[in-house]
Image 1 (cartoon, rainbow, N blue to C red):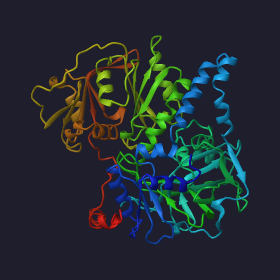
Image 2: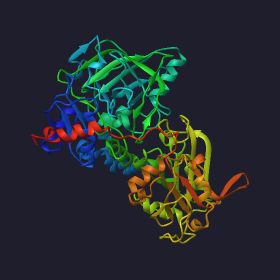
Image 3: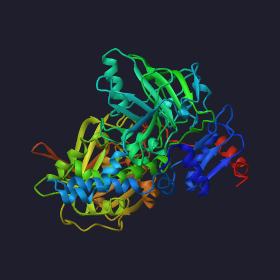
Image 4: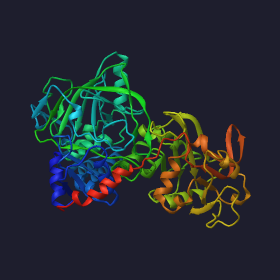
Length: 585
């Protein structure tokens, strides 16, 4: 569809969906705050033409609306995926009639793959004395550990199998030649580094900035391990991906149409502190040790444009990208997981915190088996809370989903909490890194209870407000966690809440009035094994059986990192300069 970033930007100009900002702007905090305000208003992509201290313009908010994602890819990829799944289902066993019906797929398959040329636009300039600190790298939040490359397309190959991975892993720029590689758990690049380190070898690493929009999206896609991202990029782009020979003889070919290619390596046994960083959960991720990228050379276009994004409390640009990828890949789920009919992860929670699925229950407890299958699939393994139902329902409407579930769940047999499991690196609710717990909540068959829709009664001591989120779910405003850490356990035994299947204890009950606020402030602030309580818990055949109400303590705990907030002077600066930024529009 678009061979390079330039083609996409040209289309956005024609669609009046790109604004060029001529005023000089600072990559330290200022650009990020402009970006956040524009995306909050569903505004256009932004091209900052004069960036303080940098030689290249910066473009952000490329995919921050569903419209721009459609302009980037059109409808062809979705149609191809759906037809491919249909073929896989109809050609078992194969027959000539069905093969002929889908003959157009053969032409599409011939377009998949890569094409290598001697050179490309990315090789126009080769710098053998690289300076990473000369790039217009953004600092997006004031307590970040430094400037971070936020849209790096990090390419690696397994040293043994040569299978590749292309992923977006943030990179903190330390100095002119080194940067951090945030290879958190369950990431393909990290697996490659682990394999190289066991061989005591440096891992060749090439980082692309820009290129075809399809390449950027493919690097984000949660594909199963060893499924090639470059093939997905080719599919989304509608043609073979053009590569160029490496101009310095390093291990990897270069994406010919990229804006920049950072060519380097990650030595074994080398770690350096990385962070903090304001991430997509809406909090700072803390400082931890990560591998180090050593830059050996930088190749780039003569007039290279530096692409960046800004993450923070949802909804940001990554929210729209995540929703698109889920929609694109959802037809594949029933093919690879036959008991799963539909699946959705909620971007408002940072995606990994909460997912829901419609599953089959053709025999007793098949739904639970489907849940285990989901939690064993790639990045879905990092899901913290999984809701399962066997009834067709629109999973995008979370209020309706939760109400449907609460009318059906049997707390005695259908709620499971698994302790001592892996957890997303960016989720600190357990107080540990990469460790925590998971929960599966099943709701099968017909309703077994009528749900309350209005709270009546006197609020217990320490509770100042109660708001209904949906039928069966009550949000209550309690004491500060430090003042009464055991409040949730006490409230689970209060008779006034006995009719409510689910009670959420919050610092502010106002969150019940917005689905987005409810999802974010609930699921990013509790860990199943540490923050869920019941009126009574008994052990039956080694299973924990619960009696409602179930109380989730979603108050902000002292162990959670700081919530992201814009510094006052930056907010005032952007207020004062707002008309200057957009004076020519």
